[in-house]
Image (cartoon, rainbow, N blue to C red; front, side):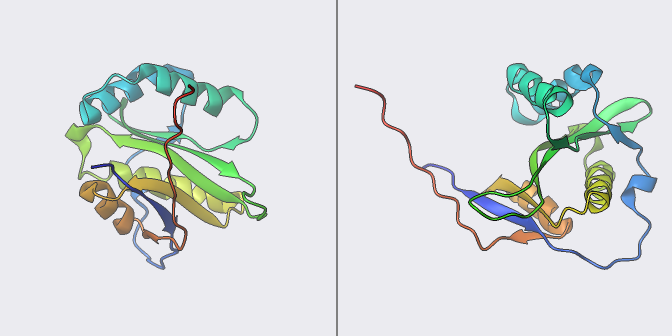
Length: 170
């Protein structure tokens, strides 16, 4: 059975708690973070996707456009990451929107505020850039990620994602 993706949008919440980023240090992504990110992804997925992350890191650090990719550190150890970019419109609509490409938290640090710190800092940075919305795509049956996104104030968007396989050339 094929998995279906669901487009997720951020909903602004009004809470007065101390930001998670105050408890877990978060900084901008740098080239030297590649190995740590690949390791976190491998621990989470069981796959080695180093080439994918090399391309993402290159885009985040070298190509034009506004990128807002971050890592969280615990005791000088990369405990999680979030990679995002800012788009200034799609399908004829002009609106600054951030797209979260990928995120990961080392399984040893899950439930310890790392994901919350990353999202908190990302949203603070995006607010400073006057970005109006944040989007990502999540597998509809990945309950853990869906629960995390909901806890961060995201909700399903009003957009449907359509997928069609392209037949091989004959």
